Length: 485
Image (cartoon, rainbow, N blue to C red; front, side, top):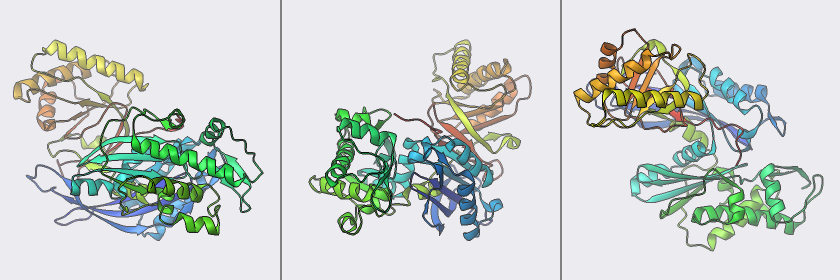
């Protein structure tokens, strides 16, 4: 972290995708970190290094080459003149088909550990959709224009969409559709059929075999099926049974107008000039990406979509991971700094606390939430977790004192030595922490932060304070490895 009036953080983004692996290094300028400021935020980002776009190394179709990827990342950081000790934050995210590999979790955990105390491991298409939309510039455009903007990030293994409306990321839509679901050699002979591609082929009653070159009409039909699934998902409800078969997660999309669309990712980049590439070599990248881009562009041009050129296309996700993954807590924290940084803390959502609830009622509901959460996450004895308090009403001294007493009772029970890590949505962490210290009978290490919104099922990483007694950097993420629809 740099000294001076405007603190800066050095942040890295590492994206290990189906087709490519990329590294970026950014400088984040922090505003509002001075004494008395009510909030802190990233006020400027500057990308200081854009790494080469590398093909993701594999040992086989089911296994990532951990050593080769680790060496690749180390080499890129050396080229960026970015020593490990200078890195303050960032994220390594495994995306697309790579997140389904047997050793995906091992890989990103290894790289996160190798690249600093607060470079975090993350996975999952929903998170990828949000990061890509932020990295592409779609999120910023939605804020600037007040329009609803859908970013469609099409990579090698998945298509991830995020709908931004003003300042909010309101919905994600994800598909097992990408340019590298089929792979070919230089002669156009088929070398690999992924699981989602096999489902699409079966649905279309198409038979193609490894070691043969599919007929042009077969390739066209496969690409058409994929393109129609993408357009179907852009349109939203209702979607076809075929699209449903390749949808990741829920397809119960909200009824929300889309004013503009941006396309990012490797296939998104190809949308600019796919026809020329098909004429030169449809298998230029050893996959279906060029043919898919050509077919999708034809479908888009038939529609009335307002398509906007993104700020970033193939690097959207890695830039999102490096510049947009980190946020900050409120400034009124109460922290035992010896506990920080902490990573991969599961979020357990606590109850809404309202004016009608007695001390006993609040205590019982808190205890029930903690018990349920530790069972769902299979939290080991002594392992930390985050208890999230979504609403405290009224936010008065008396209500905070009652809540602190209830928390003291819960954490005084046999929780096997877990530290008390609490995140409140409202600005009250310092007051709650002070009351908790008074109410609890034995000293328990604690971290109380506020003004960050999370949901159960997410994970939290909390870094060291930006300034003494001040806000802390926070990354909200998912850890969805090896999960297919």
